[in-house]
Image 1 (spheres, rainbow, N blue to C red):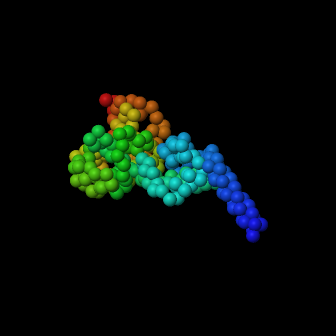
Image 2 (tube, rainbow, N blue to C red; image 1 turned 30 degrees about the vertical axis):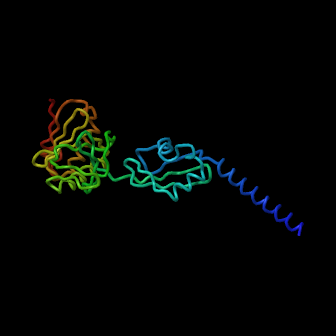
Image 3 (cartoon, one colour; image 1 turned 30 degrees about the horizontal axis):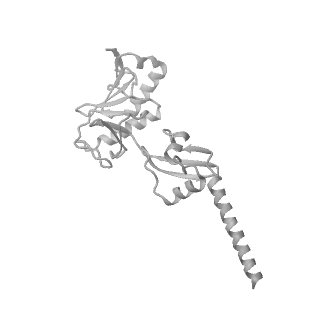
Length: 243
């Protein structure tokens, strides 16, 4: 009997030792490398600050369980994210960004909306690469609700226009709509009047050709008129006048 209890205590001691060693090992392993994919707005350093900060933030075990069993953190302009462990020291953060086509100014804030006109984000800063849309008439804006504009078709036109601009890699500072729903672009010091949404692909294609040949135009205070663009003659009626 004495030998039995001795063996029992010895086995329990070994088990406790193993558990303690495992706990020490888990607590001593920390994330060393963080990579980010799927985001044009956030880098690895910023993701570390959002997701792995604090005393235990970079502990591999803590980070793993926090990601699996706690609600994901809210990150501006991010719909969701996925944390993938490629071992105890290497983590990849896969970002799923919110779809944003433009933003409007409202009560000292910038309200970002998606292709359906839903306001998905409110921020005090202007996001680079997203056009500022002005000239729209709207009422009270509520986050996660549709932008309350008079003409609901305007969102389809904005989406079409921003897609064309993105396709031709033309970065604009502002898109302005007048009372008739006709658009003008502001690029640097230059204004480009587009008129109606008709033949918008041809207009933006022509604008791309002009800017490729004469990029200095964006540094000149003037107006380029493209509203008279014609498919029959892509250069007909196109003028540039200094202000």
